[in-house]
Length: 207
Picture 1 (spheres, rainbow, N blue to C red):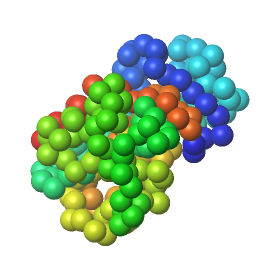
Picture 2 (cartoon, helix red, strand yellow):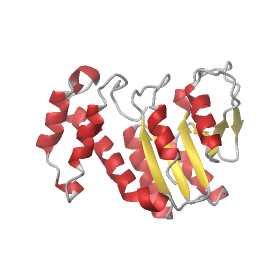
Picture 3 (cartoon, helix red, strand yellow):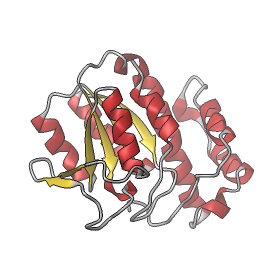
């Protein structure tokens, strides 16, 4: 878990993300003020959903804002990418023990989903990736990303992770000149983490 606190935004109103979008409809994303972040925290009772001081809740909101901004900036060019990969967090697996049939690929230090549970979030996500011709990797951590890049010639990547880890991932991809889209977790932790499949589907289908 990257953050030192836990959050659960699963049941938050979708208007939260619409409000986030309003912020970067401004000419300069960097110009948004802390007052805007504090307004979001108050309006959506985020202090009740995030077990952390208000300053850290603000960092979470800012990370989500940055992901949305980066997605919009990359969207047009991302549509032109052809060889794509989907990066998923292993903490979203239904089982985190031997009940999971995923095999470990030592070449990239990642897991390969075998589809053992129909109700597993990773399995569902992999199916979406397969439908759109993505290679899917289930990552135990961000350190796997350079290995994946080195062994493949991807020009487009969709990454699912904690908001701050998505931001870290996109920084790596920008340095490598790889187009990308990010999908943040709505619930973090060391297991049973959650992301929105509809948001993932939209990201995968761009282009």
